[in-house]
Length: 161
Image (cartoon, rainbow, N blue to C red; front, side):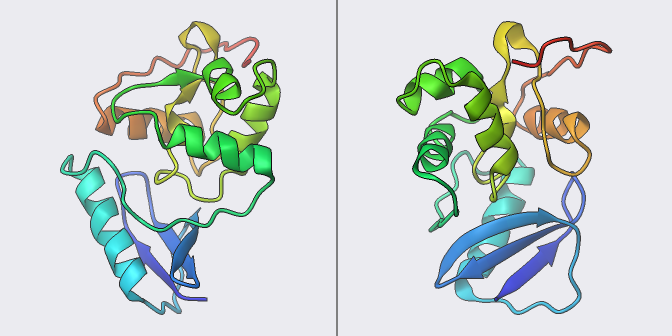
């Protein structure tokens, strides 16, 4: 499977491609890289994003998940740069208005973080919720800061959903 690694403000990341579509972004660096036109474009767009020169990713994506997960991820892609939405907003957008915790699960299972912006999803009342990426909530805060959002992470988050 073609893959390309890069350094970013939130650490090393690796982008994976299958059948000319991005299927995963993972934390860490791989030694055996095999690029492709899609991966080169993904790297260019990620670099532009990290430097504040890209508002919306335009890449072919093929995340693997349930229909519900895919609906949540599609809704996440509609959250504009520099804006956030709640788990409740995402549940409504995915057609399951009371499925807040299932949205949290979809966020945690997002195979293409950053590009599918699960970091823009917060719990009610502006609580940060969770983030499964390397570095956890500090990475979520860093990604939002790149977008101009100052996320306050309280020392005791209480109920995440």
